[in-house]
Amino acid sequence: MNEIPSPSPQQEDTITFKRSHFYLVLVVLAFAVGVLVGYMAWGRNSSAAQQPSAAQNSDSQPSVVEAPISTGTPQYVRYKIPTDGFPSLGPANAPITIVEFSDFECPFCRNFQQETYQSLMNAYPGKIRFVYRNFPLTSIHPDAFAAAVASRCANEQNAFWPYHDKLFSSDQLGQDQYVLYATQLGLDVNAFKDCLASDRNNKFIQDDSDFATQLGVNSTPTFFINGLAVIGAQPLDVFKQVIDKELAGQIPQ
Image (cartoon, rainbow, N blue to C red; front, top):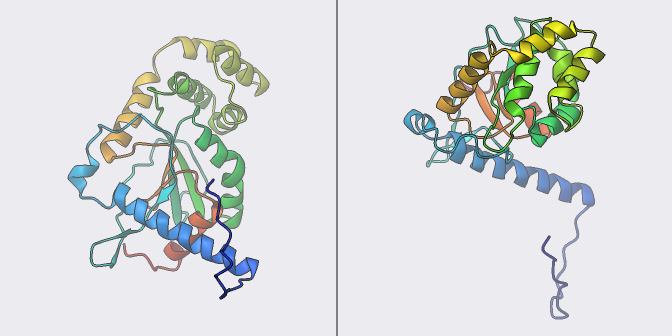
């Protein structure tokens, strides 16, 4: 962190701020930076979004959502993200659908799950449908694909979400850990092991990842709130700003 030099004796004029005002200014500036970076990541035309060359080479660097064009006019880009057939929590007719593209070995994804997810759901009871989709960054996370397979094996026994929570409970992954979690959740361990040894879930996960790449996703976690992109393990307030505007009808459809 850069140190801030002390004012020289010649600087006679001073301005004082209340600490609360200072924090408010920081929040505003942080959101403004997020908007700018979000534009750089998502405000381009659809052909640019289809280029996969940068995919699977990074975790997330927080950014979002609202893309100002050169005139300064806000421009919101909505992406069509299929949700049928993917694990979800919350009412099917919820006014807000959040799709997360995630990686079980990604520390930022784990941070979101442990620090933000439940607070977000609690803030909007009955108003959010949360959907999980796979984007294992295999070039930097050697256990990510296998962990996704394990989650699909748990899904076969209707235990995706508790198993999902187990995978994000620590940074310990591997075959022994997958079987341990299945045992702790009371799954049929023999059936679970047979599933792990097969490749029947590989295509589902690869297709999921390929879709994300074609969409332009290149880091995890990446979220789509009713199709609006939010990149990174953002703090709760950033999600709330988007959701509140969406519920109030302030974002063009």
